[in-house]
Image (cartoon, rainbow, N blue to C red):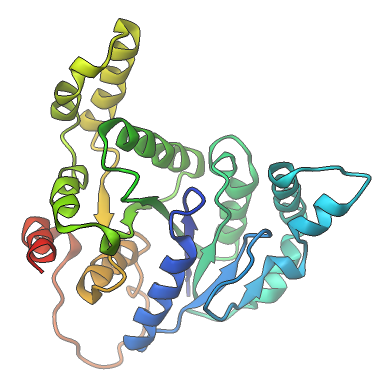
Length: 285
C-alpha cells in the first residue's frame, strides 16, 4: 500500500514549523496518525515531537565551525543538504516501512533548494521509490502578500518550486490570524486572483516600458493557465485547516486504498467549497 508525504516548503519565516505543529494537532483530533520529520539542519527549536531530525546526521553550526570548509550560513546549509542527499539511507532507516505512513517533512527556507539546486528533486524521487505519494505544500506569509508586486514575487517563487519538483502542489497563505479584519478583506482578491485586473490596477506605478511588458507577460502566463492559487491558513480556524488538508489529501489520493473501517458523514469535496462565504465568515468574526 502507498505511503503519503507533504513537503512543507517556503521562504524563511513563512510559518513552516507552525504549520507542521498545527496540522499535527488537527490530525490528532481526527484520530489520524501523522508524523513530522525535520529536514532543516539550521533549526533551533520546534514545539512538536519529530520522527526523525536531520540534525542527528549533520548540523549547520558544525559545518560553519569546520576550518577546512569555511562556509557561511547559506553555504553551510547547502553543504548540509548535499551531504543529506548522499546519505538517504539514514532517512530510510529513520522512517522504517509502515504502511499508510503520513509524514510531514519540515524543509529549510532557502529558496534556491527548490529552484536550481537538485537536492529536493532528488529527495522527491527517492521518496517516490519508497512508495510515497508526495505533495508539495508551499507557504507564503499573508502579511507579505498585501501588495500586488510582492504577490507576483510570491507567485513566481511558488511556480519555480512547482516546475522544479514536478509534483502536485498546494499553495497556502499563512498567518491569516495575524491580519486585521480590513487586511483580511483586502487580501481576499489574492486567493484566486485575476492577474490582468491586478496588472491594470498597478500599471500607473510602472515607469519602465520593458518592465511593464515583462510583468504583463508573467501575469498573462499565470492567469491564462490558472497555474497558481492560494488557500488561506488560520491556525485558530479548524474548518479552514480541514479545507487545506482536504485539498492535500485529494492531490495525493489519500484514503483511496485504506481499508473500510466505519461509516463517516459525507464531507464536501474541496472543489465545492464556497470560499467567498468561508472568507466572509472570517472577516465578520
